[in-house]
Length: 365
Image (cartoon, rainbow, N blue to C red):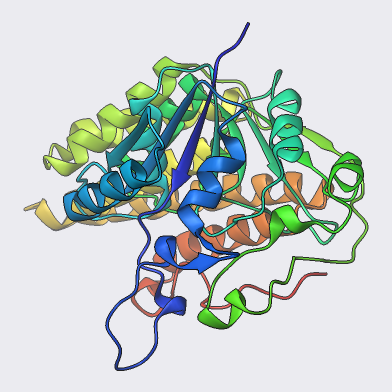
């Protein structure tokens, strides 16, 4: 029988939870219904899993949480400090670090600020994840609960580690990087388990502690949707990480060749997200090479090749976006199109003025 783990994400800075001119407050320790959010999260999954890990961003937090868990008589819980990775931090780093710390076959990730997750809903997500790499709730308007999901641990670890090496911190990239994803509709079977959708109450601000509001959204997606996003191997991701290491070490010629090979392999297996990432990193390596060339002609050629690689990446992001559009997953479609536009901006020489993702996500369709 498969073993299960739960990873509670409690290392965020909680910017929206803070008050101006007041001392920073740890949202995970804010109380609702007489208990800290962190304790709610742990108790909600305690009876479902063999392992529980809590992800934090520094040693001070680890020590503080350990003392609180001891006072609450909560034992056999690992507190994991995020790995230090140059250039990025955030949920993907936390999830990678947590997946390394547990040994189970499947792992539920959940943010500490969702205090009313019903065990039956978590159990359902585990059951639905049996034949996929990721099972994640998707509302009828195509928006995802990007931090609440069940991952097949080994593939999830390979995906998150590769994303971290490529400096991709967004948690929705985990869904984009999987081979098989199940988008689980809350208004399908979950509604019978949690009619008021209390499992999805999310505490973002201090005001939310007094107005417990769930997420409700209209739209046309009311069934679970299984989506195939290409077939690739762990060795493919490992090779991509190797290219990232070469790029970091300024072994630019080796890096661009590795990324080019990866792009071809991923395109062949219809893994368009990874093909696009390979292409844009190849473009980055080639443009850096052009700046090192002594001969003007060679510099122009490397520059041209780099922009061609970015165009190829943009095309792969376009195909990826079309898959999400077909499955009405509007959030991931938006992300893929934003990546496409960012790659195209390099070709037009406008990348300095283009933000990769808009500050505000478009309203649901």
